[in-house]
Length: 113
Image 1 (tube, rainbow, N blue to C red):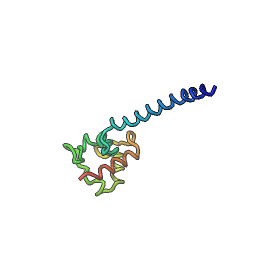
Image 2 (image 1 turned 45 degrees about the vertical axis):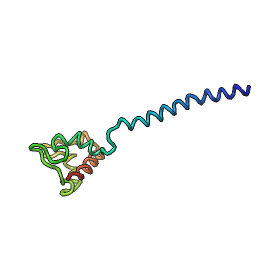
Image 3 (image 1 turned 135 degrees about the vertical axis):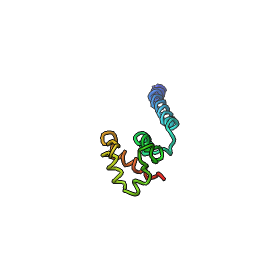
């Protein structure tokens, strides 16, 4: 009877051990497929929502204005309001971006030189 107890214990532990290894490998590999670690959420949101008109570095494209220094000169609250409410030809992003996402974009805009 005592030798069977050892085998039963091992059979119960094996699926847990295998699952732990699979999860560890999956989590470890996840990071390998993500983009560069240096790319911030703000830069990703800016690229997806703002760069088409304001350019990748905020200097504007065609008739669309530069936004370099706007957050510094006029303040972050002004930039947040414009992104949220829209202004002139710029649409409102109230329905598509959360306040936290707008904060990320404003913080990213502050890095423009």
